[in-house]
Figure (cartoon, chains in turn brown, purple):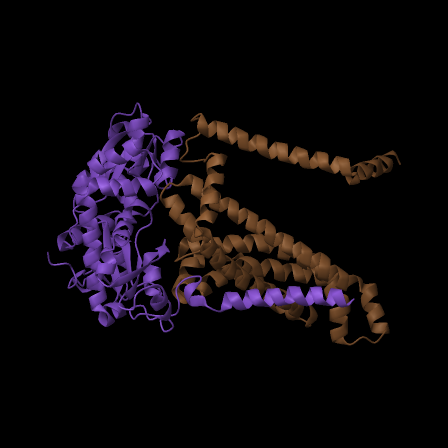
Length: 269
Length: 343
């Protein structure tokens, strides 16, 4: 009883506008403190500039990357590779998950193969992918696909299996067709689980695209990163890493928005 | 309700556009196109847009980092354009795979990798030596260790196991009466990673490239115990290789690239102050360490494109002795040295 009351008070406090501002201010202060410590460590020579860069220098590098326009071409290349591989893996992953659960015996038959493919260490086959697909777009798309597909497929399976039996019974009572049951009952039930995997895969997929570019490429953020690290340009490397992180956060935000604006409304409808 | 539908359609349209954008226009995005879509040697559509029509496109993968910097300098100076070439630089950690995938026309590659790949049937040929062919590697120990013999019972980093750096480390140890089993032998990475492992005390000695050997001396964190090329003077470390089909179809481009490559190297070497300025603009490392490294490695900067068959034989024998290669391959069939610049 006392715990519930405490939780309620806590929730009210969190929802309080003034309290939210305090949290944001605290977060900013923590971030600035961390950056300040790094700045001091590098300036004082406690950590070599070969290994860590001053945050002020990283900001300068980010400014340079954007002001001379160098980054835009590379960013577009990486985003193209990521978006193609990611959307392909999302469609294929969801379709595979649905197929395995909804087609009788399909999961029993295919699961060992899928599990084995999941277990293949992907980084070890990337040089082989180069031999099969070259070093262009298809190589990167395949890597992103490999990084994303299994997470999405397995989460779709789990999500579909979590559909409440009562909802399926209601669908049967109303003589819903198979397609109606899938679209109106099964997929909306599985949507939250599928979106968890889409969110996780978005970050890993972007890493996949970068990784592919670092292995072999003509352009892209991974290519830029290799150039920076191989010339010991730590500040530029951190600047690129910062850009990638921001892009990753933005992609996840887009997925959140998609979930909120489309899927949750569809589910409630 | 209508607004909701529009929101959904909008997001779906954006998603579809992203897929189409990603799938289309592959030639100038993620990298190389299929050979048929972008004939490497003929002026392609994209090449003709970005370069004068007379320039012929060639896709070249130099070594990343400082080893490939003189070529980038040569490109900046216009030596490749003077030969009628538009060079598309490709970055790769796997030059042989990149070459055989046909998305690259010519590569810098470790001699041993090229011999083993070509010996096992990869359709490639060695077309020239690189600007230097002897291992620019140093065994650097932390201060207090005065000789290679002192490393007995200590931890030694060999950079990457199975690589040329490993060959040099083992050879240096062997020539001082030690073997791998007399030390704790481990892979500690290359360049800054190897240097960090030394300065943080994770290893007592490491094999390393310049400018880190000089940096260790300047910062007082290490001492050079051995220079690699003193121990393996005939071990061949770097060549340029091309695909058989590219050589057959475009021998002129191979010849032009080699000419521009060595012109870049010669110019950089003979205009060292000017090149150093370019070098320091790109490489963020202590200038005094760079000076020292240039001075020390001047002797290795031979700019000799010839490939010494005896050196290749010795190189393979060392590899076989250390168990890195299954047999000595007949190298004559793996070479095509017709394009080496004559003067």
